[in-house]
Length: 321
Ligand SMILES: *[C@@H]1O[C@H](CO)[C@@H](O)[C@H](O)[C@H]1NC(C)=O
Image 1 (cartoon, rainbow, N blue to C red):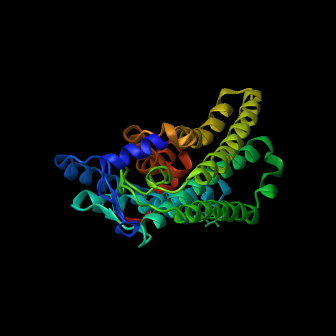
Image 2 (cartoon, rainbow, N blue to C red):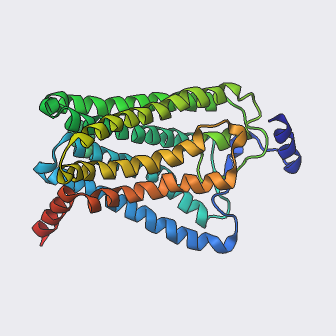
């Protein structure tokens, strides 16, 4: 660590004070790529916002979709909109601007980090809540309406938000205590914890320890909960004798499992490991996948594979005509 730090100091001899802000280098510094990247990410962002808004609209407009599963899905869409809105507009502005600055003392960078972490963790908690919901519906159908009452669902959603805010607040406060005196170029397209830590010239061992222990816990516990739920679900499904019954169960769980696999596959590969193995280019690509691509895919995964959603969508468009 020390070695790398002195090395970067040598390369960029110019000293910056922490109030001069950071430079977000973004995905590519090549000038010819800026405009195409801008167009691609603008389209992806618009598709994400509209797709997720449509999901929320469809779910709230059809009383047959007023079930815990779809309320969680609607909340997931809402979180996905926040998630991308925290990152993509600033990234788009940077693709067009020459300076690419983001202020640290003006707190834009810390604010971005705060909301990014909050939304990411809420997303994973909501995915866990959906797994619990599927488990209750499939393995415990007789008690389902009682255990997943509207109050309990609301409690789960609130708990997800509160826990993720607390988690994010801890990391942000610890980050705000650090001093940044060295190079201020972030080789990333938004202010994330790891790229910021590598730039600090104070002792970051507490931050890293917390990111590694509590961070792993917060990311892994919903994941383990999901795995356990699906082990029980699979066991229950294998007991169903007919092929059609199995198909029905799998069609409701299939979309959820797809999203879970995409989200955790990418998140775990970026976060659950020591920061010494952090690689800027490889991680940027993986990070684009789960910050920009997955929130965009969620609405498609849910509406294309799901009969209830398709029916509600048709009803909504017919009403408009
Ligand atoms: C989130 O979930 C709660 C509880 O099920 C529900 O009442 C609320 O309408 C949902 N929020 C959105 C934006 O769908």
